[in-house]
Image (tube, rainbow, N blue to C red; front, side, top):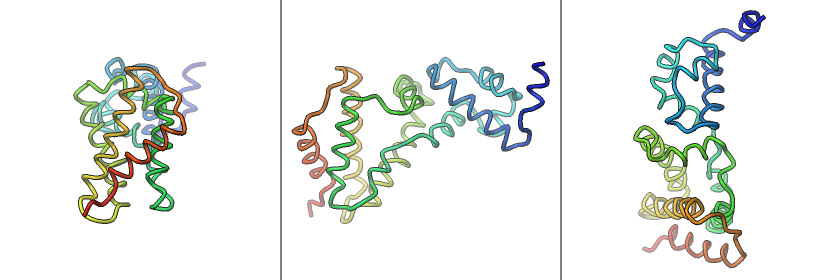
Length: 188
């Protein structure tokens, strides 16, 4: 009966690639990056282990592909540029209290010390946060200003992990708004 179920799986390059992504997303969400093996992913996807290398290059490449589909702060960037510091403050205040919505992003936090994950994290920060935020800023040093705002997010996440969640107050949001205004402001 199990062989029949495997035969019912969609075939083809894209279907197999998607099965590998889905299996990896589930396994990485349940375990840390270090605990998941390529063999586990291939078995869960009903695919040949060599296909992970063919489609993604490595386990790290597959983890990176999984992360590309995860939510990011970028949705906060949209809207009136003048309201950006406040939107960022509200988002950051929420991060003080709650873990990331995504199981993959929570896994990323658990695995942040792994060298492969560190490289992926640098790339994600650059491509998903710093670059898009800098593109929305006018004036000189947009990239440096975006990096400063990103550092605030990272610090809030670290604080939540180390000290535990704290429910944000309206005053917290006001303070964070001032911090983001300072980070993003053109000082020229």
